[in-house]
Length: 284
Length: 275
Image 1 (cartoon, each protein chain N blue to C red):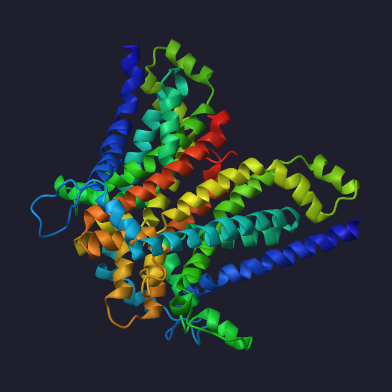
Image 2 (tube, rainbow over the protein chains, first blue to last red; image 1 turned 30 degrees about the vertical axis):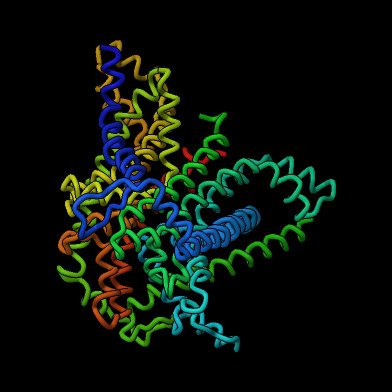
């Protein structure tokens, strides 16, 4: 009876998770080793590591790996992380109305549906868009951003959309630093940068680790934003791994191959996830 | 000392305002364009405010059906998520067991997995079991993908409700289920609200899941139908696109404001990101 009371309530959640999350992941690990296609094939057959061998010899795949790396480093590790920390640090000193206003705008960008965010940034970066209008006004050279530097444009879009998360994490972390410590350092004559470097950063290093881990994982799985802005183009110049996976699986009907790419993404994600768990080890 | 502090505050204000202005430009575009008869891709103040764009998109085909679909999908998904998460969190929070820790660790691990990567196998699986292009299939997957984080949040909120209150009810003969329903959940009302709103907002904005799992245009939620607007209808009427974006985004912004006010900023992170 006691066991039933304890196990029964968990059952619906476990069933859902097994059927719709663990199931697809297991299935993923299987079809990644087959040549399953969308059309024109009666049955798939087991082909071992062939998909992975193809991938690592496929220039489009290597291009997608490279772009994913650029996208993650530029938009998450550098952009969201640094800007989020800077905003949180400035907010500690700023006046309340400015703090509220800035926080509100940055969070609004985060709460907006992914596709809407994509459109807004598409409009911003287009040749006739706001960015070029501003550059013209400043007499600076304008260009067709989505054509010449699409990966940079989508990276900035991801910074616009994702910075709020880092900002919230770092605001929470900075609020927990006792005022006495920073004040003591100030009395001892440590300037702003030195206090940041020697006191604040070491004290929030755990938050930094957690934040980097989570935004990396979020950025690895961005699809809608890039899809809306560039469809991965032109010529694959902004095609990160999720878009490459989609194209291989559906536009080229190679589900087996697309899934092999998905499996690689999952493995990378799992590694980050495992590191994150270790960081939190003491708290669970 | 005071003057230095004032200078520093002004510098911080200036820095924040500069970032705020940069972040506000795309938002300003969507709002101004939705009210502009000749909207294009640049931010500009309209010559005269017009509601024509809203009138044009407020039709059954363009707005009401997709929004109703979104409501069905996200409402169903959220309901399933919250009910399952509350039930699952209860024994995890109230009873000691050797399985709790591994279970919570697996849940946390699953929270971090890139769901995007699973979509291709989910599609292949759904084709085989005839769940492709069904609302219920999409709802189930939405719920499953949101569940790990929901369980995690829910358990942390539930830990905040003292056990003594429940023990009194047990002595009066209440069952565990009754005490969960009558005592624990009402006491953690704000926590349940957070999980509900967060799940709903995540699903409402999600594009990839319905994009992959639904095929019939009549079933498309706003997240996908807005894409049609843009891609397949020839010349894009930017004013109307902006108006639709505003209509589609308003519910989640409002929901966020309601919950954030009640619980202070950064609410959703309380449980997951204590680093």
